[in-house]
Length: 298
Image 1 (cartoon, rainbow, N blue to C red):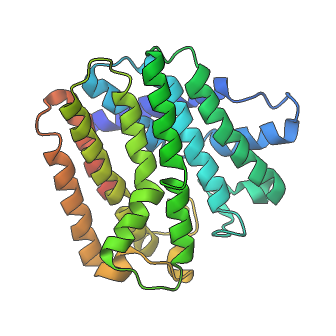
Image 2 (tube, rainbow, N blue to C red):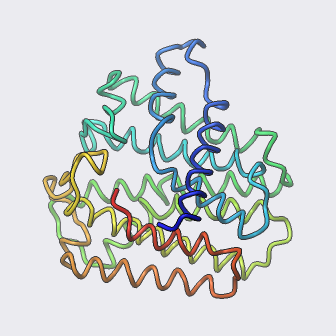
């Protein structure tokens, strides 16, 4: 990771942390246990990759970060809600997330379910009402629609349903990609698309190129996750290593082998860069982000 990208990642992590802290309900507000669990699961952890994509896309388009705080928080809240539910005993049944006990372990299963529900609702409340999102009513509505579609049965939740149904089965490469286009890729694309919607006069061709870039890195992110599940360790990952293999889940290394999966990630990175070819230095952070995704250690 270059110094410029590290500094920008730190900037985005600090910015979204402050924005989330101020938008989450206080732990002192009733119901206290629920609000404690919301803050426990959301604050002080995670790479914040999705908010960073929102901010970095805005930077490429000349959009001030303060206009994107609400959208960055909304997409991160949806992501955190998905992690809480993904870790539940009925789903992946995991005890560790972001280096600390999962929500249902730290609190209890019912609280974890309600915490995810509350974060999902709060994400859309933010998009609807947050005063810092200085865009037209039409653009705000489109942001809500983009995040809703990316989160639901045609996006992340649908991908999770396919994932659960695929345990112990052999998927083809197109089937595996389709699952991850929904499960992981949809929210990453939404992170980029909500930033493009914050620019009133954006060229549709530019918006489409950024969407295609996001589609590529959404897939490469999952390919790298699958590789790390094979090669890394629990301490580095901050979650249980080898879980997918133990659960007999379809993965890119299982289908392509480790070398093939690494080659696939590299090809997706190159395709992502191709979609940024019409941009100048203003998109360098997006280019570096694509490389970071396939080179990261956790």
